[in-house]
Image 1 (tube, rainbow, N blue to C red):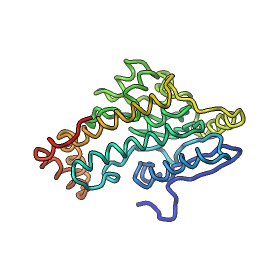
Image 2 (image 1 turned 90 degrees about the vertical axis):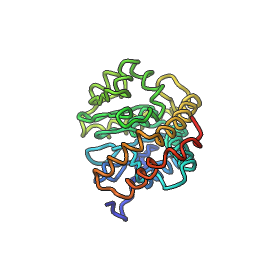
Image 3 (image 1 turned 120 degrees about the horizontal axis):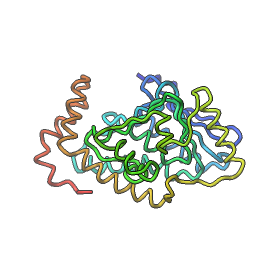
Image 4 (image 1 turned 45 degrees about the vertical axis):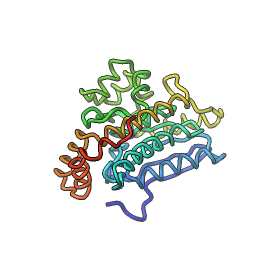
Amino acid sequence: MTHPLLPPLLRDLRGGVLTLTMNRPAQLNGWTQEMMAALKGALADASRDDAVRAVVLTGVGRYYCAGVNLSATLKLAPPKALHAQIIAHNQALFDSFLDLTKPIVVALNGHAIGASVTSATLCDALLAAEGATLSTPFAALGVPPEGCSSVLFERLMGAEAAARALGAEGWKPTAAEALAAGLVTGVRPPEELLPAAQALAAEWAAAGRARVFRGGLTREALKEVNARESRVLADAFLAPPFLRAQLRFLARKRRWAPALLFGALWATRWAWGRWLPRG
């Protein structure tokens, strides 16, 4: 349970560098609605604030972020509206990183899963702490890649490593392995990670560096990929295999309210599925 007086995201602006720190270690900094709203708002504010010339994003605790808490972000709605909600939700999340006009360094302080990994690769640099791991288990969850990873991972790592990370193997590289593959741009001891990220951001701030996207891609190209992936992802989220898997997972966790939502969608999929738009 989160503490109502503790902000989910800490902001610290010094010398033109804005450090954003995800502050829900008990929840592994998972991306609930509250956390994502705070993060999207902070990134939008940074773009508008002339005092901010570079950004650092990190987390508190042993996890950088455990990814999107799906059952805590989806709202009960008719299937067609839910389909549109998933598209809008996913696209807005990654667009918030793409639309940031200031250079950004991710200081990946611990383990990272799913969207927190893919969004980090949309940033100018990704420094990881020794001992961190990066996991993108989309295939195991029965969903397609998101966060532009369907294109960007191959650009960064090559086809073989990208297939290992995004495919059935579910490769979860350590920080050192991710550096060797090209997924991260640097590795530091945990105590040196944040100072190194802030020093790099300070260099960029002093030089007036513009935003740069990795993999030789432009903002416009990445936004097109994000829009396409978001539509395909919505189809997958409302397909029987994913609904059934979520029902079983949530029931094992005794999270009965969200389990009921996915169970109802699965049981009635035959009736409403034909009316869904297709990505």
